Length: 243
Image (cartoon, rainbow, N blue to C red):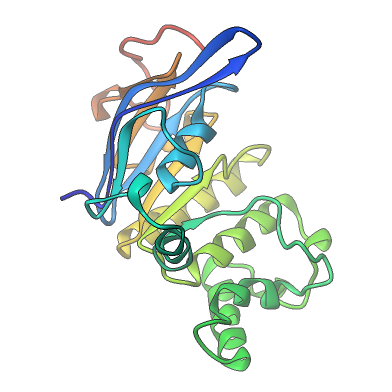
């Protein structure tokens, strides 16, 4: 049984009297320890796909299951537990209170499970693990874009989730920073965390186990043989352009 399964997922929005089909019969499986990347241009529907996979947005048709449980049938309490303990979403926006140190921010998801001092120690260890241990006493607005993303990943990983969902973690970053972040996600997958990542550019997909393109609401698999040595897709089967 897959850890995460989307089956014939459909999602539409309305713009006036016009229906915008964002997801069209999308089927996707993610197993424990898989690193799955979804490529799509702007407005392709990547964020909608991730939000439905996480249970933050409902589907119009189809299903999303996590360990065989239908997310649409879960109680609010069960869904809250799922987001607290098992599925982590990487927050680009950072802490709601910009007065927090990054150590305190990373410790936040742990405060209901352990004492504050233990949570702070765990947070400091996680910041060191992702390579930004010097950010512990800093504030969000004092960090570079790359350091913010690493802290955001630490904030998500510190709870030891089964599935990590990351929306455009490399956008706006230079090549060296992109490579460091994707390598970190690859390491997390090797440690058993399933990764579902959406990206706007090809090179970020080089370390993924599965690569898919999302275009006009359709999800298409990109075979390993079609990927270049730097993650570039040399052949894009069925691509019809951006939506």
